Image (tube, rainbow over all chains, first blue to last red; front, side, top):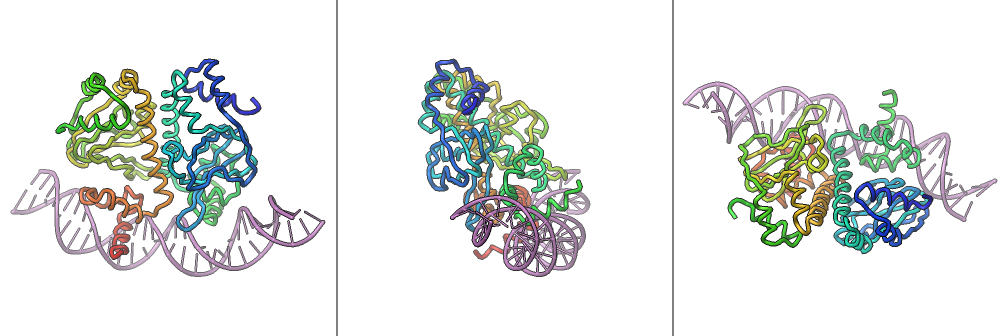
Length: 195
Length: 195
DNA sequence: AAAAACTGATAACATTTGTTATTGTTTTGT
DNA sequence: ACAAAACAATAACAAATGTTATCAGTTTTT
């Protein structure tokens, strides 16, 4: 589907059984939006009451550390979700900002909308549980990777899993994502280019 | 309650409404166990099909890195849960081992048991969702802390939140938990002792 | 009680990683 | 099309962190 809503349908079907009437209800509650490169979707400190589903383009989730420097927490590629899930669920100020790195089309799912879905769908709470569990898996992988792998290993892994992202994103953003300095990443690349 | 089951009751009540019949069902499915200091509850590579609720004592969750060295991922204090939640949910080999650091009493919740609870309790799926969300919050905090705070800041935070743990656990385990060498932790303590 | 293993501090040295500055190139904004 | 900004590589140096070894005190095991 051109507008990406059909992709969400597929994702939901991976989790639970959903009939046509239920899907119509979902579809009617989703809205779309477009953001230009560099536009801010969520500002650190504001409440993130929205889940964005990236249809096309690229987002980054980042925060300012105590030195006032941006650190990138996550890149959000096509067909993935972007939110501060803790801010979203608890209604507390977001730890992160979300910004478009390219012109980006998203589908918007608000908190109210999602609570509605949970109660209207026959397996709504189960869907919520499976989404939360999946979110847990994602972040669990991330933390395990930080413990187990060096910056270079994470870089290579990134290269393997998302080779295109390294072309689309300036290298110092990658360094920020890996939590190392851009100079150091440059050195690592040089040291390992013949492996 | 002496055996700690009442603490679990309270935790569930924090999440959902549960009546006496439902609680009796829960209570009857829980079992208890005791482990001596140094005993292994879960071995890295095995499937972790159990959630342990620590009634008394102390557990550690750790893994062997590629150099063959143990890295501590988490300490499990009284009234908290211990599991490899990803292994538990997906039925895949555990990334971690779990070991008793002191003689420890636990309540055992198996995967089958929990799926039963989810279907038998009126708000079972909601309970599952809230548990998964809470697990997400815990690990989300952990990862944010790793991004934002230095080893020393995390040490101090630990000192503030769980002062007793530093008395109960040998220091090189703390260093492992902080992902720094024991020598370095010793130096940091010296450098910051007058702050 | 003696032996062995464990623990935490410390020193000396090696390695990793960050910081700042420079340069040439590419990209962006007007 | 041009000027300004952003980008990546590199060098020189500084700071952080790891490694190995030693030692004295403590705990555990036999």
